[in-house]
Image 1: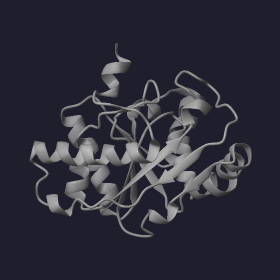
Image 2: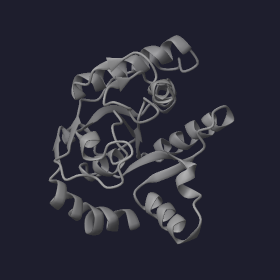
Image 3: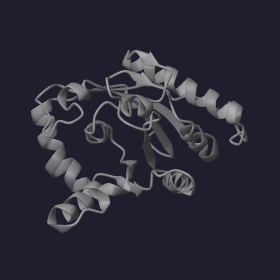
Image 4: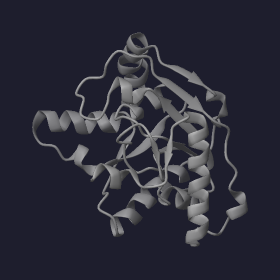
Length: 223
């Protein structure tokens, strides 16, 4: 209920009026059944504008820190994140990574839409970085439809470190579904996982036009 209210009565109309976002290829997203949306990650506002421009509800896996704040502000952030489809996960690695995978699979098992950023973190400089193979495991273990989707100019509207987004038109481009059925039953093969992930990143790069860097974004941000 809160998701519908935020999208259609509160946040959605406000953002569409102020930012005049545009979308291309929304018809490429299946109207029913499990779907994995794989996209670039330029800004924190990606997860707000992407779902705004498509008809189906989108769930994202968000770091658990957003849900553990104290006081009134912590309560507001937690319930706001839940209302817009964010699911808390532990990103510390190891068993936490397996739990994150299971959370994503549970969304897909229900026949819902899961949004994934294969880079694992926001791009530090608007370039596209190497994808992490967790997305490939989700793809192969779920059998869900895989649809590439990219955000345009969100990093210009709200760059890393900014508190309030600038007024700028924001775009969403949706590509045609990708077919990985040839790799069915091979989710334990690390070479297959890398191949699937790299194919996804190639499609994202084609849609976004970003310069590609074959290193992880997190390693660049940590320098």
